Image 1: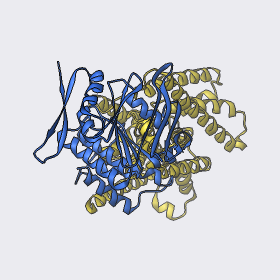
Image 2: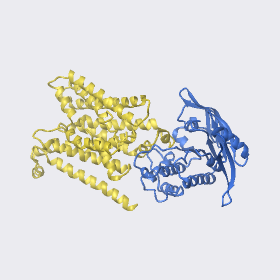
Image 3: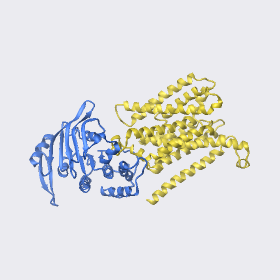
Image 4: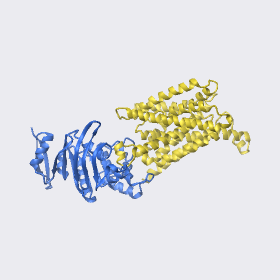
Length: 335
Length: 262
């Protein structure tokens, strides 16, 4: 028992150390050659670059990746489906459509009220994400069979619907201003993240994640059948709704800042489970750590591999898509 | 006072009525078996008692109407062992059994060290000694069934509802589970209702048998009270021609054997 918990702690420590190392690399990598000696000497330009460009995107990589990993764990357990992830069940697409609407409707605000613009985009993003998840739930309830695949099929339908809404929004957007913002945002990037605008999202995200961790024991009860969970004293409908709102709010707060980030929510929980072989609270934490690692690595590659910055989803998909195929081939994705 | 009571229960799915006006009661210390042909409504009865299926009529434990209880209050009084658990995630046997403590824990509370110790004792008592840290998903179907049974015991509820718990168990585990259940009922002054696939097991282990056919209670058979001939007649009309015989095993324990007749 003692050695088991020791090795469990070891895994967490290795995970945290990996994130710290990656975060340090992320702070250093970029077009501007940041020097530690200049920072220590108090060079104003170096400090500006460090705080506004490097630290902000590294922090988003940290908490954004962590949030996506944890929410992937929540969705997979909640829907009792290994393929349930924010981007697969349509939550991310809903958030994208919502954020695009936010960019469109809030672009009228002047630059002085940048914060209002960002809050508006976050708000619309959340509404979009929540609408998507509610729609997916309603559609899966309408299905005559109650199989685990219905939520995935419903998610695909919602994803298509969200893409249609997005297309309409892009058509009515001003090609010179809003359309470019929407396109750039959809591709997913941490480039435009600034400290002052991410604070609110980060606080919201941290609160949601803390509550999710507090409800971990209850979450695992939902992994049983509905009647079974109910007979273990769980108010299934209420708990499911609370966890769904928390997870969706978390995803929306990340997506509204970082844009569409694919596959992190799918890959991270599976990678964590492959390491720990269980679904305990430390596995949920590890899913977050893996998510952070993945997003930071993707961001480092996005800004260093080519002359221009590439969308981070290219790199997350490069890992996530083959992994999805692996799940299907290995029969682990029993939808 | 009756320990458990079902009064005029009518339940079904949509317009299809499966159970019609069922009434029966059980006493403390009693193991009551529910038997009947496939599709007679055994699982529907459990779903109605568990408040998971809209129904008419009422169910009472120690006079408390179950229909008015929250899931937590209901789970404190009554635990359910499904035919097959819906758990499909990697989770240890110990964690599954500890899920049984949920009705007694606050929303954010975790099981105490005493509860963990008790869970390990229960795991051993059902025949899963040393498997507490094993992945539930790696157990055989029979072992999974025992694990879910252990979870129900862990809940501390005074009434157990078991839905064909022996269906995946081999000969040895089948008897081990039923003996453990009888012992649990005796030591805890509790009660249990069990549906069994095998009428012979039901005849030998249950104090009383409720035979359901076509959505109604067709017969009530009491061990040591109802005559063998009457049991034979009632069961024959459900399962086809059969005969019952009393046999004594080498330990001197009398058992009823059911034989199929042509």
